Length: 231
Ligand code: NI
Image (cartoon, rainbow, N blue to C red; front, side, top):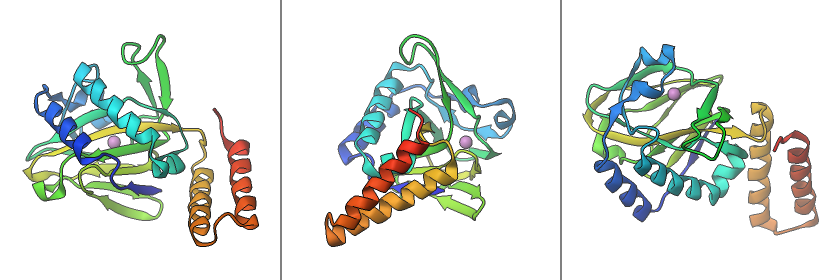
C-alpha cells in the first residue's frame, strides 16, 4: 500500500519548518539506524531530542490529526515523534526494512517509554523536487516497485513491511521529515480494505448525498472498524 497525501502542510508551515531546520545542527543519520541499515545509511539528521525538532514535530502531528486522508489511510493509534533528515550530493540510503518497534524516549513523551509498532512508514517532503536530482524514495511491495518524489509539503505513507531505499543525490539537497505509525488496525489487508471502503463511501456521498444506502455502508464501515480496531 502506498498513499500520497498532498498538501499536508501549508506554505506558511513549510517556510517556518525549513527556516528552523536551516539553523539547526545536523548529525550522522546512523544514530537512529538498526545494525543492518546502519551499513547502508548515509545521510544527516537533526538529533532526536533536539527541542527545535520536537517543536517542529508538534506542528506536523497537528497537521496529521486534522487531515482526513491521513486518518483514513492510517487509522493511527500512535505516531512516532517526527524526525528530520537531509541528503546532500553523494548521500543515499540502501535497501532496508525499518525496525519493527520504536521506543519513544521518556524525555520526548510523558513518563515511561512508549513502544510504537511500526505498521506504516511516512516521509514528508520538505524540499521541492526541482531543487534536487536523485533522492527518490523507492518502495518495493508485493505489487512491484514504486518511486516517490513529491512536492514539498506532501506526505507519502507506505507499509513498513516493504523494503525501500533512497537513491543517491546528484544535485541540491533533499530535506524531509520521517516517522512511523502504529495503526489501530494491525492487519495490512484489513486496513487496505477499510481505506477502499471509506474512499468509495466518500465518493458516493458526493454523488448522491446521504441516501439510505450510504448511511448503511457508513454503518458497515464503522462496524468493521469496531471489529478490527485495537485502541
Ligand atoms: Ni527506512
